[in-house]
Length: 436
Ligand code: NMX
Ligand code: MLT
Image 1 (cartoon, rainbow, N blue to C red):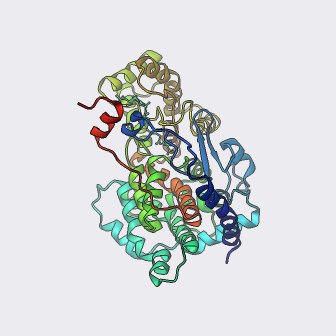
Image 2 (cartoon, rainbow, N blue to C red):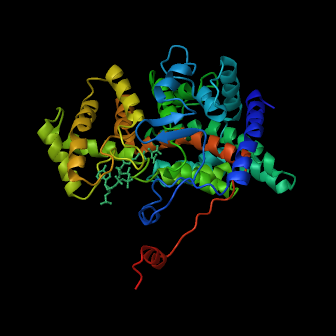
């Protein structure tokens, strides 16, 4: 057993009595009340999921295992010569809550390295897909096609797998899948946009650097990739992608089914696809105005036109956050350091000033501030990844780290099948005292 797996086994076993005690002795204690607005309104704010991997405070933003983004960036060991931590070390941290040592990072790097060969049939399936398939469809299909490789399914079907051990083959599936995601993502990029000229993986490189290498984008894109995967990894469990992954896995569907489903949720324009939408939208502006920084008036008019046409302003607003997303701020800092004079960055910077007062004045959006997607595409564009249809795939690679870690812990702690209760409209009218 690897040291990480052994560490995880101990942590799960130590944690189990806490969960078991809460259910057994305190199962009737109320943590929330639910009103009709929440029942109809997308279950907003209802506390009904548990995760210890990240927590989202509406005003502070995300903490991964108790650490803010600046703390993660400062405390986790960085790649030599780079500004960002190893993705491998970050995954170790998500799983265990401990800051990894260099040896821990080396072990995860080796685990990924020995598991990253993608079955040829996956590439054949991707090549056979219609050329105009969206990269997210290709990514999700590639993941789903590997379901036959599931160690969990093999062990479950053997009939000797005990419930307390469900996490163990899930851990194997998780590593097997995560190791292949950069390879699959880069393959999709190269066949879709680079005439099928594939760049072979380099076993000597870490997760971020190898991804940059396979994409064919030079330094410092390796650091951009690391930052991107870390920032997008987790946002507690209620967001559409993480929740979908958790929900599907709760039926004991394996990691391949669950992460493919997670990806499908992420592909919506109100969720992860917003990073693509932001770039598409900024390009409309670019076409209109040409190579110049818009005046505040021009930007205001552009934003108002978008709202008038009935569309949302992509990259702004959030279902939980009530302040600027710290993931936006982390990327903004990166831009101020590395691309302060970039025209698209200047657009985004101006939007940061112009959009919140407009949304506030409009009085609908509960949060007028920018989210992670407002800033991320600009960085990709600057480093040469201009095919913005691909941006949500990058989000999906990152999000998989968090969702896989969550599913392993879900299984470790024996969380049950998720099955909330629905009601009819008539029942709600009855509850409201307005039934005829
Ligand atoms: N532009 C215009 N209107 C907005 C925006 C926005 N950016 N954000 C919220 N609203 C509207 C929203 O459409 C709703 O209108 P209506 O009552 O007519 O249906 C009203 O304000 C209230 O919505 P909220 O309760 O503030 O937001 P909700 O929790 O329902 O939705 C989002 C959250 C993120 C879906 C919403 O803010 C949005 O559509 N933002 C733009 C898309 C986006 O950036 N999504 C990415 C989110 C982050 N991620 O990566 O997932
Ligand atoms: C996310 O990262 O999942 C998004 O910010 C959406 C959310 O948290 O609801």
